[in-house]
Length: 177
Image (tube, rainbow, N blue to C red):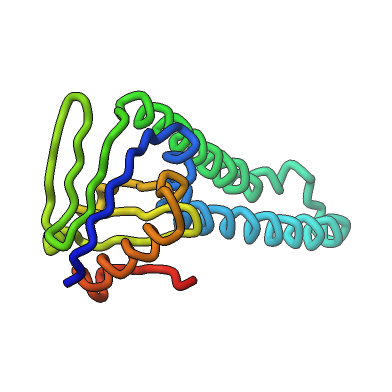
C-alpha cells in the first residue's frame, strides 16, 4: 500500500449536506418525478378521452375527479422528500464541528473539538466519489461527506484516490480525471 498521509481540515455546511443528501436520495427523487410525469400524461390522455366520450355516454366532468387524485399525492410526496432533505441538511450541519481528517494506508482518523475516531479501511462498506465530494460509508445507511474544496490541491485528491483504490479495491467507486 501507499505510504501517503493526507490531512485536511473541513467545516461542512448546510449546502454540502444538502448536495450529498440529494445525491444519496436521487433514486427516490427520480422515481417519484417519473411517477408524476406518467400520471400527468395518463391523466391528460384520460381527460381527452372522456371529453370526447362525454357527449356519447352522458358523463359529467365530476366523474373525472377520482382519476385526478394520484397526481397531487405524487407531487406532494416529491415536495415532502425535498423538504425532508433540506431540513435534514440543516440539522446535520448544526451538529457538525470543524474536523481534521487524516487518511493513511491503515485507515482514516477524525479529530474534532469534542470527539476523535479512527476506522480501518476494511470496515467501510464503500466510498463513492462525486464531482464535488468523497462520500465514505461506514454502514450502508450512514455516510460522511468530504467536500473536495477542502483539499489543498488537486494532487491531494489524486493521492487519496490511489490510497482508496489500494485499500478498498472494488469498494471504492471513484471518478477518473
